[in-house]
Length: 292
Image (cartoon, rainbow, N blue to C red; front, side, top):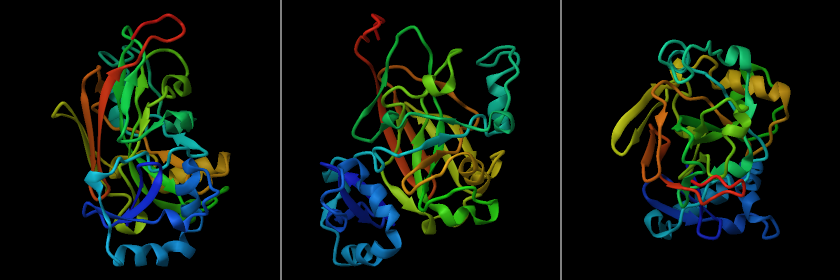
């Protein structure tokens, strides 16, 4: 099933065929608009029959006719995996790497970092690049959506807490600042267009995806190449912090990371999950006086 947030953050559900049924009324009207999807996920087992009935009754809307928002506008936690593909480690460090000559360590050393949830953006927005004298890179990733409270979950039970998946871009400003700063600018975590429930994905260890910039293939990989796979990530992060319904884990990016500039079109396509298309633009001058 595909779950959407659209127009004034109403909720929709469909089968990925370009149509959706509105299900906003299934969530209490007092719930803040940016928590509607997380609230739906938290009581999914109870509400799923009603969602399926709404779809069966006949989708009322075309996806193309609505404004798609980020399906999770404000996850409580946005945990991210650093250097979780071996070939990405190779391209970032060493001779000729992005950080030329440096030894880049993997997730096995760094474990993880947290991005600001305010960096979330949806298909209705643009990636805004804040400076004209810094390098900004695309990073294609899969977003893992948590479905139930997870605290110190062992690997063998980790997938019980995975609700679904969403295409996710981790936009990065290169430099020596801490990762959480360089990756947390507004619009630096685009997600969407929909959350796809876990039952729609046959094998979490065999999800293929690719990213293009202006039609040029930049990244192509598969989750089978992850250093820490999805169950290990859930185990790792739930050991450090309690994960709640609607929280997100970014799985890390493979090799092929490259620079993006204002005016570029970035397209992330994930087999069985969806395609996220984002435009980039220069951000207006910041209060520091630096001009984009």
